[in-house]
Image 1 (cartoon, helix red, strand yellow):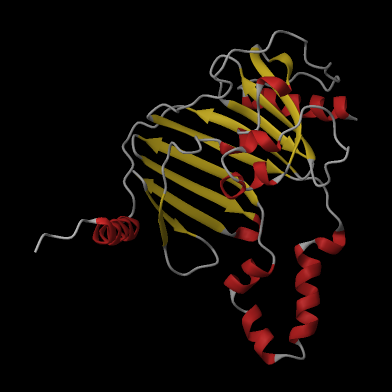
Image 2 (cartoon, rainbow, N blue to C red):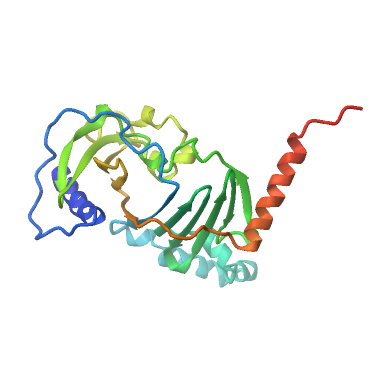
Length: 280
């Protein structure tokens, strides 16, 4: 089963590398070769670049689907006018059963980065990073959300923070592109919520197969392009991701006025809170 999962992931990864897999023949396990030299993942991205991340999910338990969950709440709302009113609000429905991401489009021009994420059921989120100031529009809030973030603290792809020489499994040539394969068992939060999980994600990764005494850990497979050290694919039991890097943008990004105003307000609040007091 482990070999079949890796084969499926590698076939998807081939298209992400800019090639198309021919036929559906199973692929063999990665070749056992000396471990690659660090860095295993590109530490920094070009100042101008863009890429997409596509998410796919296995078929789930029908009792846990959004439709089933909403149906159960509709039955309760029939007897509770307050709940019925709440269910007419899209933000309540978002919080009731948060939709999963389907696709993320990221464009970076110098210190400005724009992300648009399409979610299930037609929801969408938007994020602008201007230097260290991040402004987000999420489906569960009518207001823009701002915070400060060091863009270099976790790297561009923190979900790959668990890969290491210890869990390197070999190389595969995918449509003419040499790729590195990593496998390990880890806390799934290191992939799905790496910023919340913590920066020392390697402590959650264990070489070897699934199971064992570590309850809650899952098997993960990562595919990295050898030459560029950019991500190609990532898989855990609950989701798979495919990364596609596109031609660099040709025009400087400019955030919408509302996002720029929110960023300036956040920066002004920060300066007011941290600026040294004037001498008497």
